[in-house]
Length: 290
Image 1: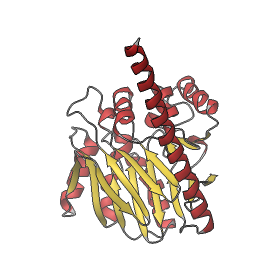
Image 2: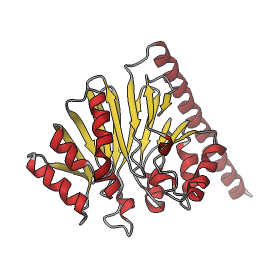
Image 3: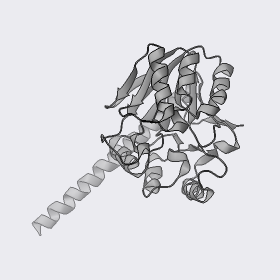
């Protein structure tokens, strides 16, 4: 009987501790929202470009520029136009989440046409033509790409971020080598998890705080066994799926859309046009498409 009482008491203590933690987290969020609504930050713009079933994401804030993935080789003109329209004369940080052709394809052209201060990549290599072209461009520019094998803290304008690497040295599927960037800006936060599939999603659920204002949906909206659990953990207000109208399979994308709709997430598909999100750190994003 005494042992049962001790177990019940322990459970109650754990519940009480969790309640305090959750209350404190919510209180901090509310304080951050109040602070930045009263004193907004300079606009941070995130453009998730329409490059088909690929990723090319441009972040700009004042004079700073970050590019996350570069789409295909033959869609680089779309990223190029976005950079030119934003008046970018130097890329501060280029992050390649992994080396699939729809993420690294335009990297060589970016490096050939813009000064790049920092290149961050996962710690593995590929035998694809697009990867070899990227490596050659890096060498020709006299640059060194930094391989990320431990969480890396970074800053971008007034934002702070952590770049999380995969936890294993080898995976059966290259998508699971994806780096994941968590970026905070005032009361807003952004999660870019590349093409993470089941194993990598499971890692992230144990590796990092997952709740974010915005989610770039992993792997173009293809559902995994743990997609539902992952989306609940991220709990985004806004999400973007990078896809074509019929690729991936619309039935697969619809499964993920249903999960997002069940959480009342404002979700956008890039085949309907580039998605531009603007944050001033206030807890609410301005979103335009097209």
